[in-house]
Image 1 (cartoon, one colour):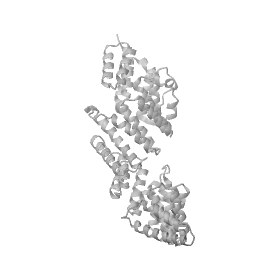
Image 2 (tube, rainbow, N blue to C red; image 1 turned 30 degrees about the vertical axis):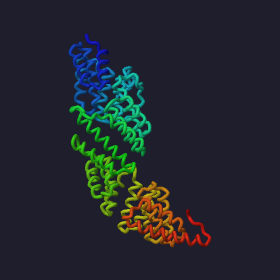
Image 3 (cartoon, one colour; image 1 turned 45 degrees about the vertical axis):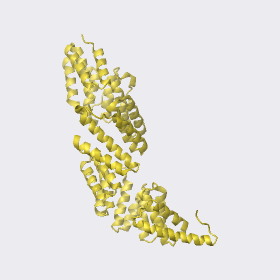
Length: 474
């Protein structure tokens, strides 16, 4: 005689060890010997195990639930059956799915509540998912990391990134092997989103050794695609940490793994374009961004168009750039619209439309795109020979831009040049700007010689002041 509770414990033990084949074998063997009511309950458990495979197992989940109902029509009212039906519906219909009833959410069976949570999260009802009370100790071991992962997903949907990061870390703690690596990668992705590149790098360092050197052939595709994601995240991290060459190696490996084991993705193409932009390979970057645009979903298209517009602007193709940027301005939900407006201002400036450029840049500045807008306003002021105003804009960039960034360097260069045109009213300040710019300006750059000349002139003027009682810089 089959004891359903004992069988389920054996299945959970196999799942905790990652032995899915053993779990299915235990269930199938028990169902051959059990009586109809017990077989119906075992069929529900079979549906629960199939649900671990997500969208790829929709047919199997449905078949298990139909078998359970056929064996015992009374299971239709079972909370686990209702929760699995709700999860299946949510996986099929998303936010249009019917949510699990309150009785299912309050069920005594924690397994039913777990699948109800999955259904609510999949149906884009994150707060309702989080409102379910599921103590982690009440769940079998194989579901504990999954519980934290679903909770992290719900917090992420609510924009509560810090909570999601912490929950992914806890999910990784409860998981083993590849599952742990995937949770660490989810954590790293959110840390990158928050600008915490060092922390993301640390999470990725923990994830990489969890990949087996010689994976079983059956697991090779899944493992390789997860590894592609690891390389993709690592490329972003290294790029943020100022290592574009190594980032290029990483994103190429991500693309190779995708091509070999899956399909090219928008994300990999976009990051490849970003890396190539940092390496100064603008033509190749445009090709990558065009690929990203072709692969983009409706939500992703503004990001790809923005990157493509900036890359075209870098190649001094302002007409084409403006076309891409205008497409982004028509997306009111895009979070970087002030920056896009500043880029449109730069296009107008290069097209000689100074009034339009000034108006767009002033709007971008008012909306918070301080650095790119100020650079355009500085250029416009220079063209009108309004030197004091131009200097004010460049000094604002110096204050607001990241030290050693391209904009920061350009602002120091331009501030030096404006002061030279003014006749060096403050030679010490001009000298300091030139000195800062020179630390990041290669000798091959035309600016290098110009900055040297400005420094010499400023130094000579400071010496004259020093000789007449002025004070020299150290």
